[in-house]
Image (cartoon, rainbow, N blue to C red; front, side, top):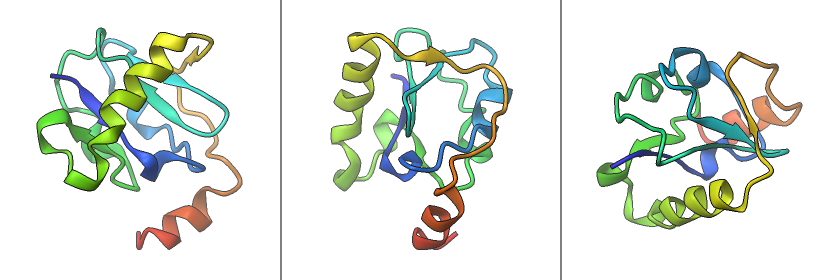
Length: 103
């Protein structure tokens, strides 16, 4: 079981989570971060670091977010994503998205 990044990350890309990952399993597109399920060691260190609560253990995904297991895997499998191992500036839309999510 891996950890899954959900749509709460979309248009945010806060990268606090990548700084605590011991195996560097995070990859990014232009508007979102994904976890490589084959590299994730299920430590959970990333979960409390996400300011928009976008990361869940696969078993704990809310029903409305279950589709993100496949979306993470598809994004990683498709390739072309950059490994993200260091904190970066969030997207310009991040603060507005954070507010819209109630954080």
